[in-house]
Length: 368
Image (cartoon, rainbow, N blue to C red; front, top):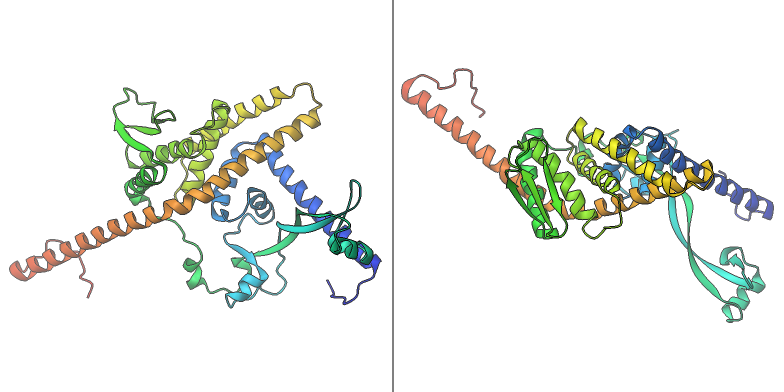
């Protein structure tokens, strides 16, 4: 858009209409996402895997980024990329998001309001003199961000902005880190017990704020179950008004977000569990408003689903930042032990080779 120093009233009107149309399109995209979840709950897991990368954004903006670029991994404004010394590539189309903005609104007549920005000179003077009142309101405008793939940011520096995940052989270490986080940050104690079942993996007890896991679980399933039960501990300790299905699908959402944050492959059983409970939750929502029209029922369900996602994303954003230091420390200790063990094996092998002339590991190559 060409910059005009002193735009006319008609030009201002056109800009405002164009902005409002963009806002309408953004809200339409968000509603379409909620409807897609209802039609095909299996897509929720894919969205959550994507959303785990954008925990600094609201669930609404995550939906907007997802609908416009499913391959996005790290997005920032044009200015933010410029501040990092990088430029957006020529011809790249930005991703539209909603940006919260506070503005002053004047009550020029009873129940009639005008923004301070659009007020007349007389109205501004009356406001400054205290003759009319004003208040601050929050609204949203359209902002634009660009994915890292749309910039010339050096590939070798990508890890400085976002991490690509952890190796699957560290499942036990990650479980121990989350267990420690649960105890130190949430006051949740975790125990391993014989649950007299191969079907029951574990459970969370809100009354006692405890997590119990089946002793038969190996590291991978133990980590998966722990991320699900920690979801209950974070989201449902005091939420007794939610149905079992809503609690289960929300805990699955948290589990998938955490798994995606760790860069681990999400178990298919977790995806199926989420889809099954979401379908039940969806039916319960529609039963609550049977007297409404089909369109009104859909709008009601969309709003409830969006609110649910917003609460999960908000909790995830807050807790993953508390969890990360525990993960970093446990992984550093594990990697140090692995490196020490590897060095010891190399030293013993070299010593044996010098003493006997025979290598304990014939194919082993010493790194100098």
